[in-house]
Image (cartoon, rainbow, N blue to C red; front, side):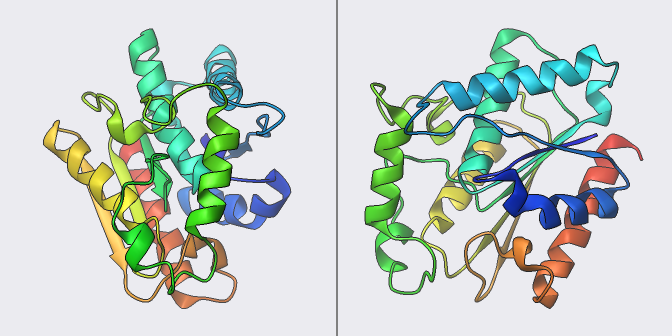
Length: 224
């Protein structure tokens, strides 16, 4: 079972979830979690944890479950792993994070020097979303910005990012911190690709290659 945690509407992620499920040979559950600003933190995290625990209650073994999330959903996937570990829940076999937003403090250098190259994201837009999501909490709380969390003991991670996205440093720094705690991390940075480029597999050869990579990664760690 692959659990998909999107950064927006599940309907917009139907094609991506379908492609990942087909490539990994698994079923996919896409979570329609509550969104800010109407439902700020910790609503989305609570919904993600509820969905994961529901799968366990249905009899799915954690070693046969993989998480996948993109953008804000990628950061939420990372936060969910920290939350589950600290709560004593069994962790999924692996997680694929696509252009994850891991630092809502926005301290990455790429936010500034790549803003003119990113066709999708802006610093101002990210700041507005960060403020809406965190609500009354501070942006550096680990379950909001997993970059600042204790990452030891997390399952294997596949992190994909592009050289033309302002969140590039969120992926690079998170991969570096996780790797230094002993987490098995694979980071792939694709030249000239923008934010969540695997989602454009219907038109991009690089996207198709990324889906294949995600499928292989999930199969390897779930034993399918």
